[in-house]
Length: 365
Ligand SMILES: Nc1nc2c(ncn2[C@@H]2O[C@H](COP(=O)(O)OP(=O)(O)OP(=O)(O)O)[C@@H](O)[C@H]2O)c(=O)[nH]1
Ligand SMILES: [Zn+2]
Image (cartoon, rainbow, N blue to C red; front, side, top):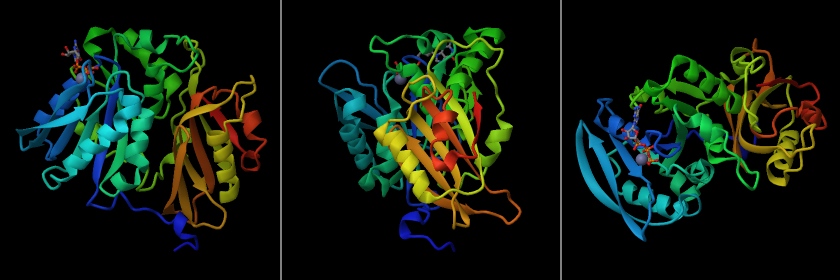
């Protein structure tokens, strides 16, 4: 055991069988989310899955269908959800839906939640990730983003009047798995170009190509993207996912991914100090003078005085960390941090002002 405070002890959520995983399915209007849920509910996969459709439309209150699939049969119930913009009011509605659902615990072992096409998955993810009451029942397994292979390029490139990041880029940035759907409607060349484009925004997510949302559920369920079982592969990312956008035509978009590796160990204090400046104070600028706005961050850290890795996860301004696996004696000690967000290019100079990044090497993608 390491000698750390209780705060640093691993919350072994993944090992807690009484908790139900939630996968959030997001993606642009008409990308194929409902088709995916229908497909999963009728496939034989040995799981009893509860689906929450959160398609808010016009009107005051909409009846929502919730299906619990059990050995191919569908038990249908109706959940009443109040209407409202998903981004700001999903907390009440989403939590209520899950709470109702939890009374039927035992009848299902997995929850899939479909958001509206225009939703920002950030706030939704934070609810399932960090809401204390809810988190005793469920945990966020990951965010799956459905991308329409035919129209994504147009959406990703859209400029918002206020200059903020558009929904499409935001969704892609927050995706743990990105499903490139409707591949039947594009050529191999278009598909390859689109993949480059997606990689230029989020180079960390797994990309799966499908048509008619026809997917092996294993690629999107139980992915444990919030790393509670120990993200030991993080260190390898720096060398393995060596994708480079050099020589490729990339649109003029500001959201991107960079991976930074720091040899040796760093102090927990220095890490917290950096994360709070980056995520809360938001005062760190890149070399072009633009504030770095993080959408998603993941880190596997080697902390001074600890014999275990510390996994850090952030979604927008929220972050959380927990100790995971033990460092083996022969493993070189290092930390890897993946930043996904706005103005993440050319940030090494700014990072090096923080002690923990003095020795850092960076890979920009
Ligand atoms: N050609 C083609 N059509 C598809 C594919 N996947 C889904 N569709 C069709 O696209 C339309 C939209 O699919 P949905 O599954 O309703 O998409 P959605 O993301 O749930 O849409 P919203 O909830 O309105 O945002 C439907 O008519 C589907 O049949 C595909 O791979 N290829
Ligand atoms: Zn839908």
